[in-house]
Image (cartoon, rainbow over all chains, first blue to last red; front, side, top):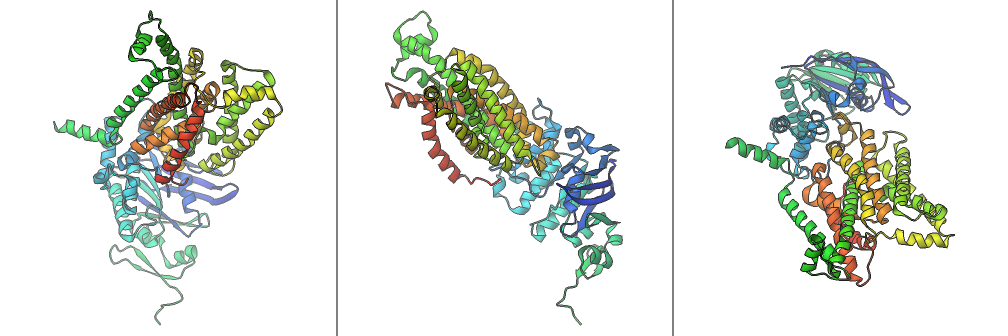
Length: 267
Length: 345
């Protein structure tokens, strides 16, 4: 399995109102890989993700999918290729897990068609994949934070896109659930070849789970590449303004950032 | 064997819990409301007279004629209930606020202002003329509120729509008062119309109503799946291939047409949309593919029963249904709002 979509941004400027946050970024998203955008608070990680997802209109430059600007696609057609899970989606009161996951099927249904067999199967498969089948007829309100996040990702899976963007999918979760979510996304990528791009806060989990890193600083792309090439003492100093030591993660051999504060430094 | 149980389980998952039972109960209530509306009032008719009135056109007893007169009133009340129920559910879906209703977007007040202008300045008195004024007023208000609500960052967000609607509504109702106060004639005319009543419903108003009702229903049903996606937030909706602005526009048009027509023909009847939608969401959940038709049903049931009660408690006169729905609606709404936690925007 795998997909061959070329997904890239050229000379991208974007932001809110008159404030430009993204300052001319060129990037090409690696196919069938997990890419992670890292950077300090306010550096434009989320803005970049939202702009390539068409949630924000760029003030200059283009985001193109297979050579065609994403705003030139009919919205539903684009939604069958490219999906995004934003950071804080709205949960309608009293909605069940199956209902919420089912709403991810919208781009596959036409104005007059009801639900097809494929729709039901996609929803079942997504729920199975995220291990939430047993909660299918429960209210979302009854679930824990980690379970809820699995439901949201299942909704995005039911959409069956080749490219999936996620804005901080592990924020507010306990470490156990962070690892669980990242493991599930990795299995998704390995099983279906889904191209995944996400914003993550934790640089060490990013280094472990990413195939490819985009490092942002003040709206500019300052480094990109494999975690082992990109994440260095110098980079962490320049984008986070933090002194650190980078060692090898004993579990995964990926870079592990050990921060150096003012206290608790052995002499 | 296995596959049939599988597909049944599959369907059950994507249907509201206990949907069949709720649907059957709703239909029974609807039938009861229709029968009571035909039988009860200043003159209570017998079963025999009911049958005569409905099925034996050659029977010319007094009771049979009373029943025939009540047929149009009952149908009119069902139409109003359906229209207001759906207008309510649409407005709530668009603003993503479970307590929104057409009056919150200023739509009712806009319709009222134009009807009042028509009465005061152009001596307009017939329903056929009211309806166009009401629709124009409702549409201009909706466009205006939508325009203000769309300004600035993020387009027409629910909170901005609500604020724009509330402010516009307040400004328009002071205008209504300002226009009415100097004219005794307008005050007289306005009083008949101002308190919503389905008693004025006749075959002519039903004929005017039907085309608007069909257009509104059509848009509402077609947009249900998209509105379901919009319920997850504008970002998720966009990701699912929806243009939130376009969707909101169409849903508001349908809401304006339904609520504007009902307001023009019956006068402002409050709380039906709010009540019907809220009650139904409480029992079947938030899936709009089911909530829209069920709110229509609930709206028709509540309005028709309210009309019957209004006829009974003020017998031999009548209490206008607009007064009654406000009396029944307000306390129930407060209970509902306190009971179910109303999520913030």
